[in-house]
Image (tube, rainbow, N blue to C red; front, top):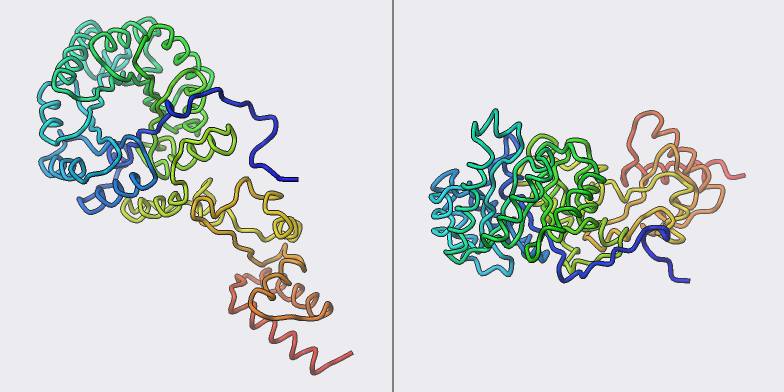
Length: 395
């Protein structure tokens, strides 16, 4: 019998995978993580690796930030990547002109629409904000750009206003409209509801979801957005971003593939390498137990687990680690069993009798409980000591 990844009770998504895609914002929203600043070298390296993965759209930055930011974005745009390069833009003509200078393929025009933001941040009426947004969309389209219109704080905007504004954006030429869960307060059910209702008002434009992770819902909210009709998902590598971050690229991609049988056609073999690259340049360490790419998520110690994995990895792994450029490792400690230790010894060319093996396992447990981690050198020392002991005192 051929064992499959995932759970047999998971629903199948009837989605044309040609329409579903990622637009990654590691280089823009990811860089807005407090303390993170990607230099030119970092941005180019990450953009190239995202392109190697096969990401359709890369949001390369926010040209209004600085002249240096503009020049770096322009360099990325002229790098000859397969991905389309987008930038963030306020609903201002000068921001769109900066994007045009950068030679990018498109812009994400954002403006807040919630009553909270209108009153305390913009200090404008909704109708004035809507007018600004539509003029910006029209100007960008007139200059040949792909345009995504993003209603900031969409999940706290009345649905009738959100639907009208996005329909208006489509009529002014927007190729995509975004549901931005700016403070990560939406539930999967509300994201599904907003997307499915909004879809009724649109004829052509795709819906994109931009989910923040303040309650750990960014991945499932993104997927529920897709179930509700969204066709573009905003992500960042390792989930970096403002506050608790954004939907982690690697988790979204693998959840869709393994749990929902939705293959985005990406070169997932570089996911681990991409994660390490972003960790290096962002200087934000990836937790060792982070889903998908954490260094220890394919480590096994418990004897029962190790026995299972050695017989068939799917007993205790959701997918094979090598698929994403990761690796499995058997570690030794208090919970180790004989089969795992025996397999490791054979791997390093050591064969021992049953009684010697049992004594080695006992010593491993004792050593670990004393506070020493069982690295290969420690394991070899234990093996040598046990073998010498047995030779001195044979039964």
